[in-house]
Image (cartoon, rainbow, N blue to C red; front, side):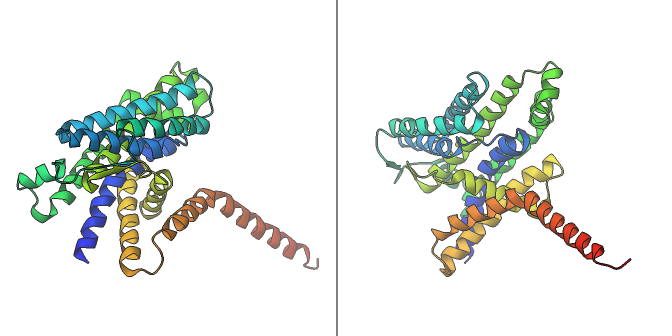
Length: 304
């Protein structure tokens, strides 16, 4: 059971990077970025391919640069060519499928068996002992979270936050929203690709279908964390991404260990949780309206 908990923590930290990316694109910029699935695989493909060539450390920044390029394409389609944000993400995601195959040498998967990764290098350094993978995954996630919070406190970061809050006000303030959206999506997709790069080296493989449903899982992690912590501040939002991801992976591990339901069924539950969480304000308003209507009818039936 300890091994399962340790694995859940490691994957929770690694996938938290996707949740933080969605925190930036969905919560702050108010953009549903559907590039996430393909960008995650792109990060894994670049990372595993370079690691197989003997460059596991170089693979990480290279994957992030590839993710930034994917984010730039999505932003360019949206801001310069007038493509709606959802369609821009779908178009980029479709193109990334072929790009990912090209990166992996037209193979559906690439393996890293008996190849050095950043995790084996960390282990050889004697840091963390049996928990070296957990420690490395946690350190990278915390570092990225701190850097993201520091960036959002800068002038450019504040402009990105303002773009998501009120686009018309940003235009009136002589801020170029096309630039802030582009920067925001590039950073978000760089974090998604970093997650894919780390997961690829952690699992010693990259698969062309490895990113299927990642955007929904990332949203589920973010929503679970926000339910626990709330989302009134940026710090709570970033922490919610990490905590929600760890909780989700623990639930996943428990389902896998106890076999109370098929693991494949967890994605359906994830989709339902995300749909209900997003629809919650509408459902809440409908319930309140029905209560007020029932109270008004009850009051109208009272004799004068």
